[in-house]
Length: 178
Image 1 (cartoon, rainbow, N blue to C red):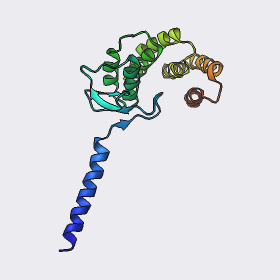
Image 2 (image 1 turned 90 degrees about the vertical axis):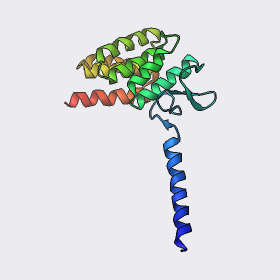
Image 3 (image 1 turned 90 degrees about the horizontal axis):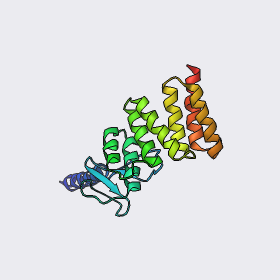
């Protein structure tokens, strides 16, 4: 009979751990905003209140929505990311265009993604992340020479040690080995 309280305590502890793991927002990896969690469908992360809120009726800034859309895309929830980007008021910002390009490219619509990336480059030629993604899209299309042009542009923006340069260089190197 001594084991019953011990078993109950173990079950309570396991339940608490499970609740913590499965109810907490998941964090997207490798994004421009590594600390933006991913909420369940129909919710967005509000940076001000630091919690997930219902998407409908949420009064969030374009920056907040764009960052959250990117977190969704990095979590491979591309259609949801595009839906959140649709709610951004200013559709001409480089980040919004870049994230839209990223999500569409990951959905297999590479040419459409390239179109968004080119608009993002026009909006902000010094935005290294969009040049990295544009270069990756060019590699997918077999246009390694155009990807190398983006690599050179990234070098001029942030040098050869920045993450964007390193990531695109690895993709190009991998493509050349094939």
